[in-house]
Amino acid sequence: PLDYGTDKCDNCEMTIVDNKFGAEIVNTKGKTFKFDAAECMLNYIAGGKIEKENISLKLITHYNMPGILSDAGKSYFLISGYIPSPMGAFLSAYGDEQTAIKFKDKYGGEIYNWDEIFNLFSKKMHKH
Image 1: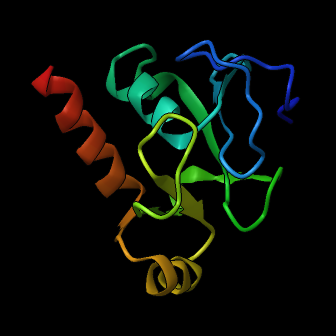
Image 2: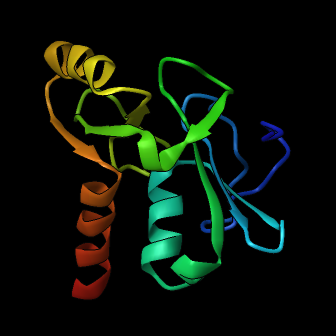
């Protein structure tokens, strides 16, 4: 589990403090990489800091279930200007599409599954 207030993000080096946004990768050797937000995990993978085939688990904290890590590949992601996230991507994660839709109905924005959000971040990486 993430140790909020102590662990540092493996992508941006910031201390992980907000328990609605943390993320982790566990590689095939069992080493854990910790992130303060979904966008940092996405940028870490999209930026080639870890090869996709070396990832055993991708875990994400759902916005409505603080502090609990769940499978990122089965999660839904909302980008909404009304839900700020630690690194400014306005990206929050949810366990199922229905929950994501409820938050979208309340706050607006766009919903993505894992592949869609990963492709979005990959395209951003390749523009720089």
